[in-house]
Length: 199
Image 1: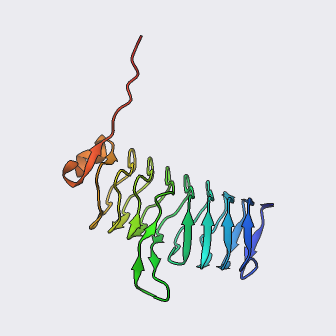
Image 2: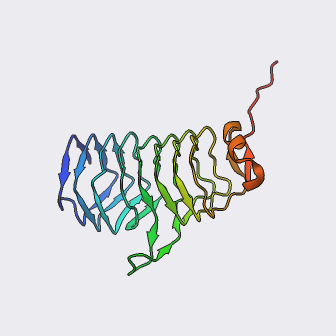
Image 3: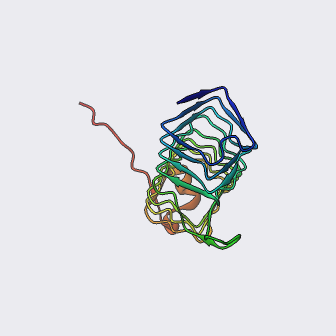
């Protein structure tokens, strides 16, 4: 099913399941997504910045050129999603233990992609980000609090003001600029330049 230029509001799609759906230039205005699931869906140039997540699920979804800013992902299940070229400013990516309003658990985002994602001011709390691709992402003033960034790729990412509080870095890849800022003392490694042999 393809939805174009549609405005979703209130509880219009609450509790629904969307499979292989495309949302193009849609707006979700104060939309309640309680018990709503999206499987193999694409949100192209959509605005989801005012949605209310509540036991919401995204599996194998893409969000190119969409806005997901100022959102709390505490009540969201995310698996195999691409946030490449998505605007996700000032978000909170964390998971709460069942029945708790403040006790957190690990949020596994290791199958997600964040290349060229606008993440300025976002907080990742207790996230599993092993091997995740953040190439060319804007990570300015992003906080990685107690995250696993082992083998994550931050090549050509803007890491000005980025905070890696109590996070695990091991073979985490940086370009030369980032390497000068953070160095290998924290578990970062310098990207390998691909040089083609001249014949």
